[in-house]
Image (cartoon, rainbow, N blue to C red; front, side, top):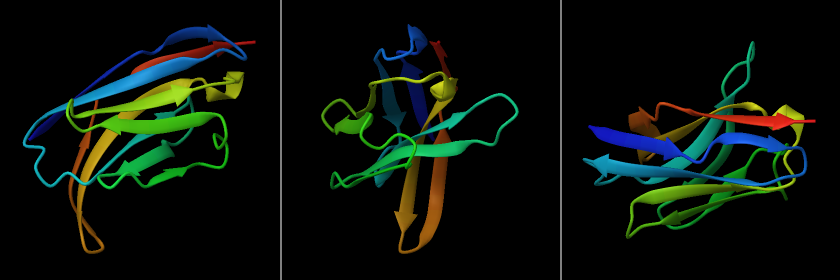
Amino acid sequence: QVRLVESGGGLVQAGGSLTLSCAASGFINNINVMGWYRQAPGKQRELVATITGGGSTSYADSVKGRFNISRDNAKNTVYLQMNSLKPEDTAVYYCNAGEIRGSSLVRNYWGQGTQVTVSS
């Protein structure tokens, strides 16, 4: 099992910044991709950003240029730096960790979520 604990959510005005953290513990061997997803009220959960063990990153078009995902392997922690926040970024943000072998996702874990609210 892998435990993911998120922190850093909160209320911020439009144009502001927040940094989310996700600390992983447990059987994290072979976890080779981590990421952030979000879910707004009445909407499906969507991918925000991912980072591989080698440091390759990908972003949703809606956050490119504003958000930055990074990881500290020594601390088993992934960060999401969010800048120029917009009201439409309001959502519960979830940390995700997965093990991919070839093209198969063999393990997949979620954190409990942290609320981000952006006021206009």
